Amino acid sequence: MQSIRTRYFLFTLCALLVACEKTLPSLPADQDLLDGPVEGLNGEQNKRFLAGDVAFNDQVFTGTTGLGPLFVATSCGSCHAGDGKGHPSTALTRFGQSDDTGNQFLHLGGPQLQHRALPGFAPEQIPVGAGFAKMLPPANTGLGFLELVPDAELLTLADPDDADGDGVSGRVHWHLIPAYIQPRPGAVEQNGRYITRFGKKAATYDLLQQTAVAYNQDIGIVSNFEPFDTYSGVELDPEISNQTIQDVVFYLRTLKAPVPRNPDDAEISAGQTIFSQIGCAKCHVPTLHTGPSPIGPLASRTFHPYTDLLLHDMGSQLDDGYTEGTAATFEWRTPALWGLGLSKNSQGGQYFLLHDGRAPSIESAILLHGGEGDQSRSAYQQLDDHQRNQLIRFLESL
Ligand SMILES: [Ca+2]
Ligand SMILES: [Ca+2]
Ligand SMILES: [Ca+2]
Image 1 (spheres, rainbow, N blue to C red):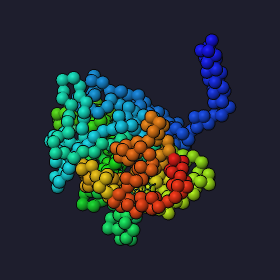
Image 2: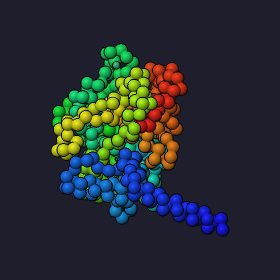
Image 3: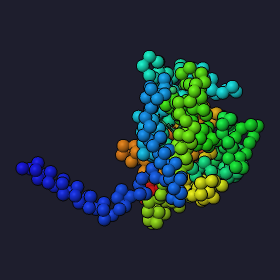
Image 4: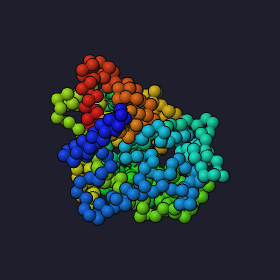
């Protein structure tokens, strides 16, 4: 009897929810989803976006389609589910320290650990003596905008010697780039090095490099761009077409940026003011600009990612003993904070923040800021409960 009533109740509840969804098309609200395209793509561009979406999310590799033999996962989407931030179970590990010749552990499988392998092959282990860092997949939203910020704008934000004496000294990552990469318009070069910007240590130049390296290092799929097999070190015939890689790049480029929720709420705008007052905005820079792009909706835009794309000394607590390019063990690139409030949705209902997900709340992420983040962290600690609450509400609205 009871169970029939319960079932009837559930049935009407479902019916009601369906009805609600029809009358209120904002459930689930568009602004709560991350995986749509930017507005304004033409028909051809939408087709490319969809082709990239399928390759990114649905193409699962197996031994017969080129997987491995060493790998971390079998598809992009298995780590970047819904294009949101990943969970510790989808983290990857990089190891090794650099000297003048680069990562000293390259001959032992560095820098990336492939902890899975096809039958008959031995998965890698972290060699004795190697420093390592765990890294959580970031959200993939709005990356096309970040890719198009002119080098000149990043150089303006940088203050490598802290000339203005405010304790914050972000720097660009000067790094070597592979031959297949086409420098962006206005690219600045220094002794053969370019300004790289993607990844936790800003070691990747653009979304093509990020994608080709991810296929190679994460899934064991070699391409014309990154032809060397992680197991044998030998150059192999491509296991994926240039076209598919470029479709995925197009998909990543044109994923829309997260839309802030309730920005006009008085508590939230008070929180935004505090964010600037206590120095968070020095690194989590609210506003950046894109340069020219053949993709209309991305060209010459003003946008609000809350990052400077620069490397910062974040102090000893965030020092994992792993270097990448010329980024030191304690240096990390400022993560964009847009979409922060949505990250729980793809992290199983709770937060895993900072590069390895060690912070279970926004507050604990702030309290782990050291080095150049010292001053704003202690300014946060001086706030009263109400102000802290306003700040957190602002961050959750992004
Ligand atoms: Ca392979
Ligand atoms: Ca490896
Ligand atoms: Ca400064």
